[in-house]
Length: 374
Image (cartoon, rainbow, N blue to C red; front, side, top):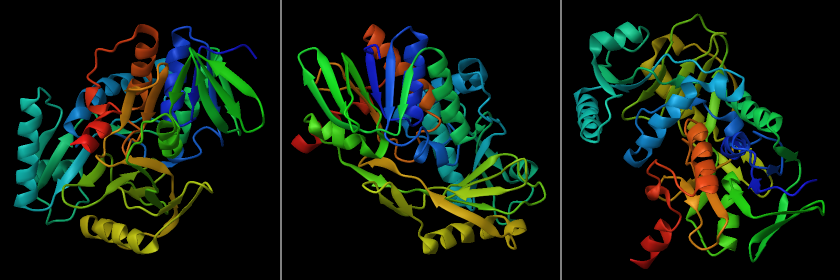
């Protein structure tokens, strides 16, 4: 095997996106995934492609990523199941609606106008099955959803077609740097060397960062999802709620996906998750409250993926503050799927050209060191 220019650790969407964008720039890439690509949260999340409701530091990246989602088939040779029917956060009372107005004003002041406040009539025009007590909401018209596992595979396969080497089913057991060269010893004894490493190891990424003197307050979490039997068509947009935890959408085959961030239990050492049925029941009650049409729906399956959540809810994106040739992309805290296309591009820009035009300083890994020093 020829020595790569860049070694990517982790085969989630962010690792595969980095590999693809680097391969597009003619960089020799090897990606190492300890299980199979898309095995964890990247392949089993809700697939939300949303700018709606993002933390302000993420909005510029999210807006730029949406431009890539609009031409995702050009990028990956696959439409990734992406559909753009909008995303709406439901306001259940006047207090919720006031939060929508305040959010709109905050975004406008920052130079973004993609979130709009809608009243009761427009809400019902877009979501006719919504409960009578709901009074409006916050809409992002061009947001939507995609199929997570298909998306990760599309990025993986396109990267491979462009020359990237993808190694699955083998972990990086040890990573060391000697002068200008990183050496990764794999669990099967193979040794890979490269001048640049991308740490995109998801829930396990914090361990690599800590090993090189950059501990991050990050935990492995297990966001849960449920899917129901097929129902007659009643919903096009993806729906959330202003004051409750919810992500809710109906697929073309009639099944309905329910999630939003309720957590099960993650066991990253054993690659396992356990669902919490009590919390799933709470999630289902929210759906029954907001959508009377779902009161007799049967849940047929529930699951959880493993991913990393940081203490401030923002990801870590960019170069190491201590080790030359080390770049981080992890800690997406249950909302990294939509950012996948653009963050891969950002990492490729940083590695190849040393800079990006997008504002990534809020995601610097040394923000945690600064916080600890205060």
